[in-house]
Image (cartoon, rainbow, N blue to C red; front, top):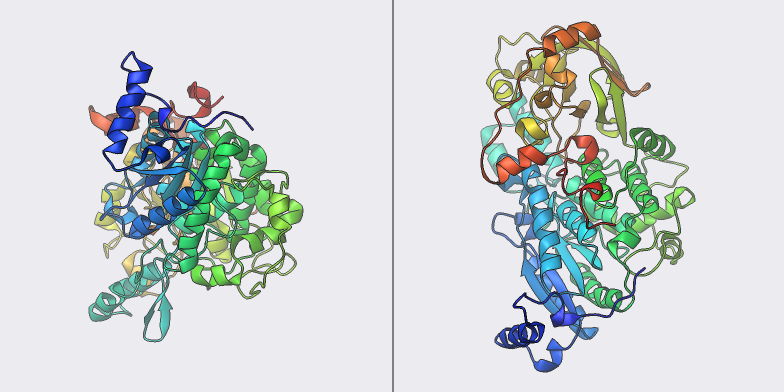
Length: 570
Ligand code: FES
């Protein structure tokens, strides 16, 4: 932990060649905003705010920012909120993933470029929390994450509904013809009925939970519903805690360590959380030079049972998780497996956090270690001739009878080919085939959540519910099925995925953690001789993205932002 005096408004003065003039001018301009001289002499807490009318999940950010500011003021510092870009998952083309690194750069530079002694980051929707944590990890100024919290559920004909696992199951029923167009229109208005992030253990809720396990947010805060008064109180407490961090500086580099990253991965396994969290947590960790290998990831997964019974893996919603005991109750179950000396933003170690008296725990939602939902963790890494650098499989949300599958490849060259042919009645596909999507990785298409390939309509109508599906894409954290994702290297950089042809045999073995293309190595090489990458964008952010984006095992970060490529994280 480092010690430095707060600089307040005099931090990082504008370069005029006359620091005293720069300070005088800054204070003068600050006073134009109605801030008293007395407050201008206080330490400063920045509040990164991300409201946007293209981001439903952040609708209550202004209220949270007000509460954070109240906490900062009460603790004797000056709150200053500032905007960064906001990423609303379903409002961005081609996919929010393309813009995560842009938001992380915006966050990092605004933390460092503006005068603040600490920062509170308010985010929630899928990519926003990873982006803010990546930025904060690189900026390495004392930082606390506040999340917007999950939505509450809606009701439809007596059934609870929550985005977005139920969005997918209703859409699948509509495609199969068991739900008609009137009902699907009614359901559209009942899936997302409050402010907040998706109501299940999708990517946003997984990232909120991981942030708590990492120590970057206050304990007990990840799962509080967006509309609950405790959510506002937690924001106020986070503002107070940020001021404490100024006087007793604990930086992201003190908090994000190999031990805390492993704790976060362990929680991810116990939650049966989103596959996307592996990419994001990897990117956050690499900002501090920390890498968890596929072998270590699998060891953590094999040792850690799934303890939480929430959709998409199980039955409940995030509102149930909160009242059941939330992240701290899960961590208490995992305590013998955790690194207990990791410090958090509250100045307490993981061990001290977990020494807090046990609250009541709803065992229908959070199981005891000895009676898990599943004896092994939710996610595993696969390797093999189809994915030499790795792929991810969410075994907790897959069909066990498909865990050991050998099947014939039905190949779609890209997203356009998939949407043109998946429902073609002439498509040559059978229930035990393996659906393969190419060119949907970071370089190919920005790595959209397209890995949840729809079951071809003619098979869905015949009652087929799941098939092995393989791609270099990601999948929504709210989705489910026997789906191999993040195949690396991706097709668009000439990985073996690019070589697959219709009719090739593919073998998936969850037991051996392998994914293999059963084609001779020499033949794969011969097919790749004619490989040509997609055209390179020539200008703007898209050009920067394509020049710099790394593969999934490197968190899809930019090559110039990871710890080894920058002078900042030392
Ligand atoms: Fe924002 Fe699902 S759309 S978390």
